[in-house]
Amino acid sequence: MKRPPLRGRGSGVDEWRAYAAHVLDMPESDLADMERGDVIALVEQHEREQQPRQERPTPKPSKRAGDFSGRPRWRVPDGNGGYRVEIR
Image (cartoon, rainbow, N blue to C red; front, side):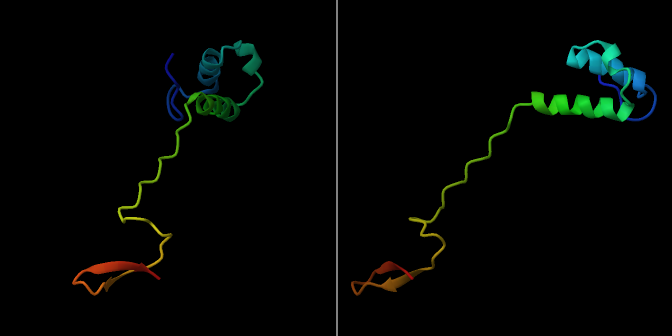
């Protein structure tokens, strides 16, 4: 069964009650006293519950060697013609 539109032709309370009864697998008479907005909210809540939860993406590792919590790194001469890194 196709989901009724939110506006326009075919978006009445009867169409939404029939769709909700089909999706929720319940008799349409149980939805007879509900208003259109309440039926739509019930269907949308059911759809949210049926969707799989998305995991948060894992943070990418820092490209800098040895992430020291954002502390500044300084390259200083080592006396042998090279440089060493100091964390300050």
